[in-house]
Amino acid sequence: MHDVIESLPLPEAGWTRLHAWRPWNTARPIYLVLYSFAFLLHLNLHILFLFAGATASHILSFVVLLLCTNEAGLEIIIGRNLIY
Image 1: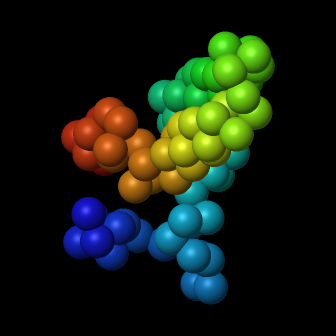
Image 2: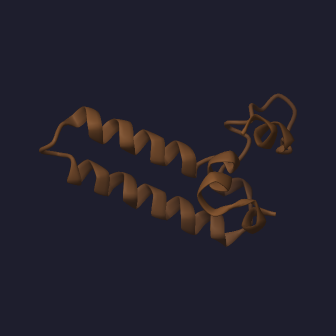
């Protein structure tokens, strides 16, 4: 996993790898679709776990949103071939 993250290109000097990619920095529509899906899933997790406990909802929502908002996370979810 560390090798995958280290091999990702940085768009600008000074950016961290976690924040190197955002959907509005690219013209690829698949990113916008996936980001929208991640946001809706985040909201659904809040609704689903509303009565089960706020802690579980926020942990799951944070993990999903974190994975879906950086290239390393997208590689985990959909695979590297779709990204490059």
